[in-house]
Image (cartoon, rainbow, N blue to C red; front, side, top):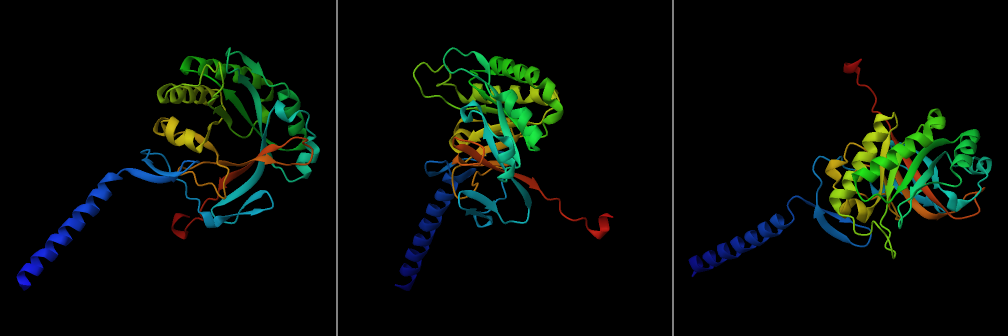
Length: 284
């Protein structure tokens, strides 16, 4: 009788181990992430540096996200376009804003024409005068690498008079436009990734630091991150903390911010500058 019980016990243990093994195998090579709408398992992008941010390192003072960890220095910034209309940059600076990502232009989502942002020149000149650090972004609706190359060359030509003023990255900002007549609504992963890659390489060759903007579902499901892993990421994640799984240098934490000197709502961002570890005595 004891022998039968022991055999039954072994069978139960074996079944349990097989079930556990099956569960483990099911998610092998995957990560459990917040995609912006829900948490789900997705394939891990190989070779892409992982974020080391922790939820406990972040908190809010009013509507402003703060970082209390020890690995990074942070700066508070905004991203702006003609939608913010005329900006009093001296007031923006006095309100604690340290950097600005300024839209230089965009491609229309129906006809595909490339346009200069109406307030680009005013913004870059006056932000510089107020003493803010400046980065740039271009709102793309490219359907592939050829159009992305065209956009990059447009940006380079537009930025020539201001190159010495741009100390932060130049970002590729492609977002899906789910509207009637949108020429880019059904772009596939291959074309989107190729567009970001080509734009960023051309920007880099022109002497700027490239960066790719994405919000969480775009990054996790639309981009092949393994192909754009060599560029900085700017992540839109309206949440308690920057929980994007992969390393990023700027976190867009609000799209409804209020800043003195700007009459409309404005996007708010935290930029992270990694603190180098102290040298050990042996390395001196």
